Each structure stands twice: as C-alpha cells, then as structure tokens.
Length: 423
Image 1 (cartoon, helix red, strand yellow):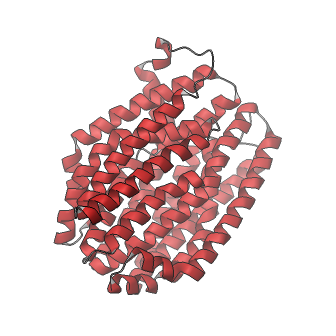
Image 2 (cartoon, rainbow, N blue to C red; image 1 turned 90 degrees about the vertical axis):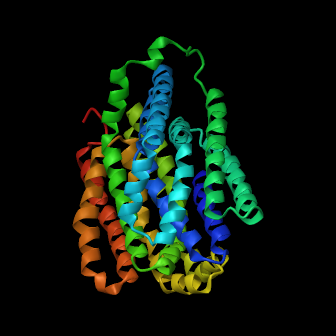
C-alpha cells in the first residue's frame, strides 16, 4: 500500500502545483496528456501484472532459473517496446489528442507535455517489470524504496521547475521523465541484490525469439483488458473536455483521488497476486483460502476508511489541490460520486489480484469487455442528459459490473476447483 500510494502522490503534487496557477488550461493539459500516457504505457501493463503472477509461481516452485530468466527476458522486451514507442511517438500523440478533442489552448499545451513525457517510455516499462518481479518474489519493500525515492525527486523537481522557473506543464513533464529514469536505476540496483544464489548468467537465460513471443501470448489477455479500461478512462476525459475547460479541470482533480483509491486498495491486490501465486505454485489449497479471506477482509476495511476520508475531508482536499474558484466549486458539485467509488471498486481491484496470481487472465479480459461494452457505454448513453453527473454515474456502473462478473466467476472456479492447474 505504501508503494502504491506514492504513485497518486505524484498526481496530487502535479495537480496542486498547476491548480494554483492563474489558468485552468495548464491543469487540463496535464490531465489530457497524463491520460494519454496512461493509455500508452498501461497498454503494456502486463509487463507488471503478468510478471508478478509468473514470478510468484516460480517462487512457490523454488525455481531460480525460471525467476531470473523471466526477469531478464521481460526487461529486454520492455526496453525494445519503449524504443518503438519513442520512434513512433508523433503519430501516436496526434491520434490520441484528436480522439480526446480538448480546446485549442489545451491541445497545444498537452502536445508539448506529451512530446517530452514520451522519452521516459523505456524507463517506465522497465519499472513495471522490476516492480512486478519484486512483488512476485515477495520483496515488496524493494518497490517501496524505489518509488518513494523517485517520486520524492519528482515532487522536488515539480516545485522547482513550475513554481521556481515558471515552466508550467512543460516543467511537470521534464520532472516526470527525470524521476522515471531515477526509479528504474534504483530498481535495477535492488534487483541485483535479490538474485537467487547459485544461478549464473548464461546464454540460456536470454532465450530465443519464441520465448519473448510466448511472454506476449501469455499476457495478451491482460493487454486487452488494460486497453479496455484505459479507453473507458480516456472516453471519460474526452467527454469531460467537451463540457469545457472548467469541467475538464474539475474532473482531473477528482480523478486524482480515484487514483489514490485504486492504488491504495491495489496494495492488498498486489499482496494477493504474490501470495495466491505462491500458493498455486506449491499446490496448497489451504494457503489459497487463507490468503483470499485475509485480503478480502483488509480490502473492505481499507475501502471503508477511504470512504470516510472523502466524506468528511473531501472539500478540504479539493481546496488544497486547486485555488481556482470555478474549478473548486465545480469539483464540489461532483464530490458525492467520489464517496461511492471505494466501496464500488474494491471488489474488482481485489479480484484482479486473485486472477493475476492464478494467471486466469482471460477471465479478466472477458469481464472487463463485458463491463465496458454492455454496462458502461449503455449507462453513459442513457444518462447523457445528466451532463457530467452522467459520466460519473457510468463510471460507478462500470465498477459494479466488474465486481459482479468477476465475483460470479470466482465463485464458479472455487466450487469446481479450477484454480489449480491439475483440476
């Protein structure tokens, strides 16, 4: 949880620094640009999630070759994908901004932000792999140190570049790129101290082309699931942008709190990924049940705590993030939707962890596609007359649909004993 909470902390600082400037366009530009990179980078989020499940199962089997080979091949794949993204970044950014369709002023600033952020691609994807491997091998302290130090650097540079040097949204982008490479460097240092004893670096660890294609094949379901989720969030941002820069900026503030919720609750899901994967690697059904019940109990307590925080301190938190009166007032109007998010979304976050640890990634894909296509889009279409309230209503519906569909599959797998490979 501490590791994950450093991630939205970055967004909170970005929002607070830009939210106190004299124009909402800067905040809107970073909201659009950051959303674009969420789609671009988390399309390859399987580099983190898939690595965790496979590393946890190799850890449970006490397979040092499998652990190191997975890490090395995933890092090389991450670097290659990152370089390809840099090579083709101009058309990718142009298409992304065209689909989001913000105002002309926001588009110009967002394009500048994106052209800088893209240079962090190899570092970001390497981080996904390193964090996934460290969590899978049950060394959660490593990602915590890695991300806290790097995000602390980002915060300092944000304040220096934006407040001190007046670089606005451009300064936020430069600070993020520097911090991403800092995080990757720290992560490699930590991983080197965690190499299994007796496992030497050999040509067999690097593997063949077929090994890399196999990684992509195994994780294709996570990739489709992640793209579907990110497209929903991009659609959410785009529809908010069509209602004006003030609504776009207000949604950016509230979505920052959604990131706090998701990353906090994902702490329990990450633990479930590692421990469920280990239980399956060992073939221990008893351990599986204990982990599931414990993760469920703590996730619910965490969701309740977050709900209370936003109910009693939501207005004060919004005021901390922006001093622009119209943005602050608009965000307050939609605050009640934020109150409902923790308890609506906690089930999906937890079950993501269980399904990833069990490498049941096809189920994750199918439930997300169902929730997005059969629930989110119809809910949005039926509530278009509600304006921005309709957008938030649709997002809550998406979370509840994920909870219901994944919960149904989870119960079916448990009753029929399908969590373990031999059944």
